[in-house]
Image (cartoon, rainbow, N blue to C red; front, side, top):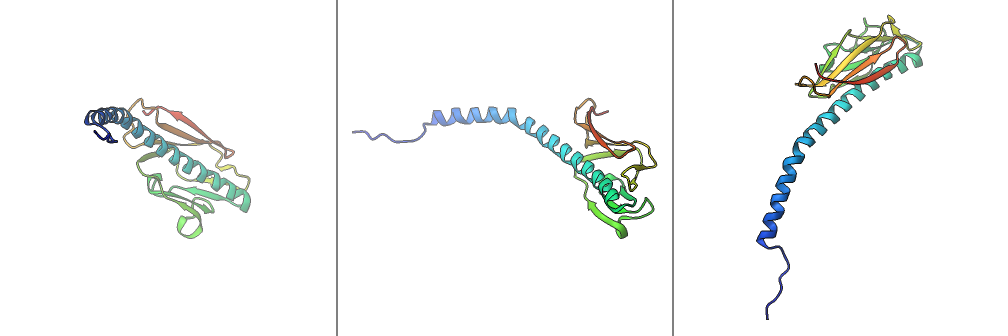
Length: 160
């Protein structure tokens, strides 16, 4: 009498491995794009929340508060009390580390908010965020605009 054994045959195992290899080949590039997209979203949200923190602190404290980008956004930024003549070392409210693998550009350096939450001077400002090595035509690009009254907007864009 033959005993039935439980398990897989060699053919079943090979077919399963081939299906798994095909699935992995198709899925891996998609995961790379997903990770890049999440990194871009995280960097954008961190930048926007930092700007909003500076505006909120200016209103709460009733004085000027600055979103400072000393050394460029790639090296991090801070929110400090006072205007752009102040610095993060002495008057810092909160500091932020820049997320990696993102390229930032800014039209003007520091953003100074007055006690009403308006920019000083009242000129619109913008920042762009893109993955490092963003290929021309990729849709992984964000523009953060700050209006003269301190409101922020985020738009998707195409890498230049």
